[in-house]
Length: 163
Image 1 (cartoon, helix red, strand yellow):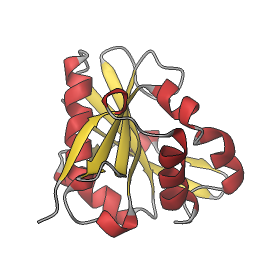
Image 2 (cartoon, one colour):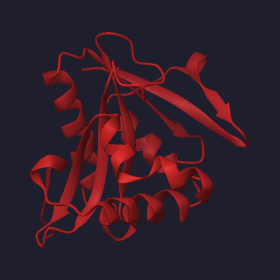
Image 3 (spheres, one colour):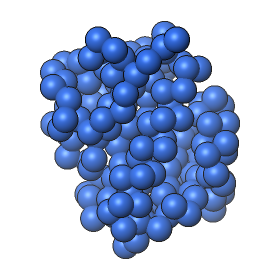
């Protein structure tokens, strides 16, 4: 049986390079983010500045996933207003998908946002990320089509749920 834990990045001693490598593997190598965007967006300090970073670690302490719970006051927010939070950068190492890691990260991010006083969580995902969309729906998120947007050639679907 595969075991892992989800902890705040502040409780884990994660080298910046490990976090950045995971993001590049999932988003850039996966074809979801341009390398030029990743150069600044995935710098560990910039990721940490968004909000509460949670990481999933295997039994050996290797980072296998991450997510950011972003409070409404963060400059990284796109939609969240007072009393809301956003879920950013959910990713799981390709070798560890379908093992419950993503679900645990989503639930942990919701718990962090709820504890901070948020009543709703908002996220956006690319239209091509169908597995992520299924995960979000399974966790109670519903589409908010009037907030959908495009950035260059990529289209993004917005989801939200009360927490």
